[in-house]
Length: 308
Ligand code: ATP
Ligand code: MG
Image (cartoon, rainbow, N blue to C red):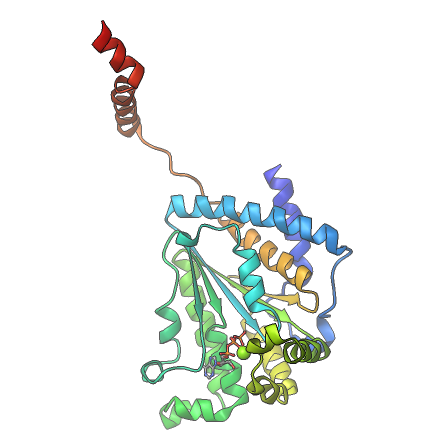
């Protein structure tokens, strides 16, 4: 039963996975409107099932306390990162999850090497860490806006045109290090179409309760759409590895994107297959002793003792 479920999930996410070593052309290879052969009703039911599965595995991950999971979420604005986090995590125990959002780096962050701030927010063993934007911003927004790279004050010899190839290699090695040491790195790109982004921005402008979500900076960033598509294509090609593959999730339908994200995370947890620790001989004896002591304290046993 569990195996059949694992197989179904593996099959479902296979078309989303970027094969390590492949060359990705985002626009040509991945359709933001893809939804398998699923209706929204089926999807909503499936998500509820998926959230339950995540809760079950998270409890085991926390109890086992030896492995951790890092889920990295990347996307263009309005692709639904926040909603995805909210829905996928809805059934989880908040004590075992830490969500970190990465914005423009602070002065303290910029005074360190570019991976420092991400390393500071990694999950502990037993935890699921979620990066809302991640170290991949360092080869995306920083690449699209060269002034951000200048702000990082790299030594001259490190800021030549080879900087992006070098960062890809360093990121792959860092993720390998994490994975070798018990932390699975799960990478998801919410792939939104330019037209759907336009519609969502318009809705944020037109509906007062959504105004707070809109920033004019988002429209400025949209002007760099093509540069981002190119940068994403290169990132997906260079950093989808056997130990930390990328999944490109169609994001034009929010309900479908959420199912995919839950399935990708569920798959990673099933691969770990965490187990509740079993107790040894001595600990089992201690449990029996404790049980006897607690039974003796039962109110009816006490009143019987007093009465008779
Ligand atoms: P939302 O808009 O849904 O609240 P967000 O993740 O877009 O979420 P914002 O505060 O709008 O959050 O934007 C954060 C900005 O910080 C993004 O434009 C992102 O590209 C930028 N950013 C993230 N990391 C870096 C970095 N290392 N250098 C420069 N800019 C960065
Ligand atoms: Mg934003």
